[in-house]
Length: 105
Image (cartoon, rainbow, N blue to C red; front, side, top):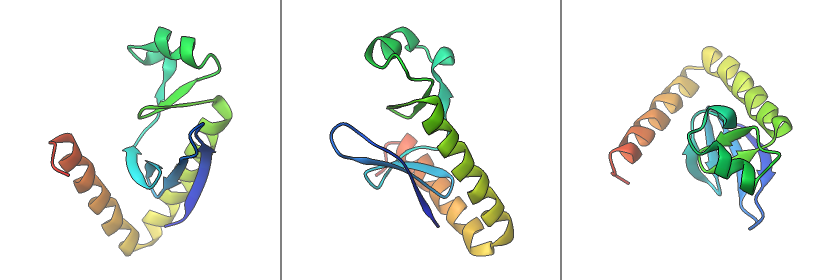
């Protein structure tokens, strides 16, 4: 799977799209973007990052950065539909995410 750099955080960690996952410093952060205007903590988010339009897990993104994520997701989706190995990777990532939700690391 290709890695697409979205941004480097202030503390030097890389936020990347890997397949259909958003990873922070190589660790799974999110599978989707959430618009800040729909986030329950939107006021605090905008106080801390006034230019934020989306959240990728705990990380704020600008509109341009969110577009990078969406473009990388579209490219990954195309690759997955054409590649059985990529489909297996998607299931592996989904299982990892489910385990993380359940507190299993």
